[in-house]
Image (cartoon, rainbow, N blue to C red; front, top):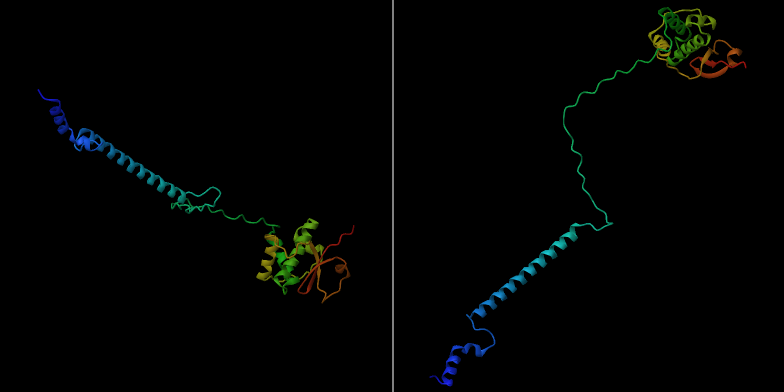
Length: 220
């Protein structure tokens, strides 16, 4: 039988690595488990470090691109897109012809044109229009046609052929309702040829060329 000393020596040879340190011997099962745990810890540490770095970078990016509350924001607004296409042509609206102020018959027009020619043939276009205004205002005031008005207001009996400019002046007043003055002038005379206290007793409006024009003064 083995003595106690021999058994002790055999056990000592089988477990000599354990005496030298409290750490498990390399290659043993315990050492392998310990190494795996250390590698797992290192991997976990690296993963935690990487995650922290990602979060830090993300926070910096957010701080850069996010505008703080209350600060001005500049927004680049693109111009609206122009749609190129074919659209229906706009309907052309013909301008309405102005209403004729006083529709002259051919005979009445001939009388008015000849009277204006006799009274203001040598005057300016405005002077010819002023005489035509007096005839029109007299016809409207008395409610008669212009050929009667020139008789009632003692226009000259001379009836020369009218020029085209006189015809245009008559058309401007009677057809288109144009006026040189807004006042309802009725009377005119040439002070270089005659004197007239009656005319000067009325309301003076304008002097054009050799004529002075007046509106009627109220007798009330």
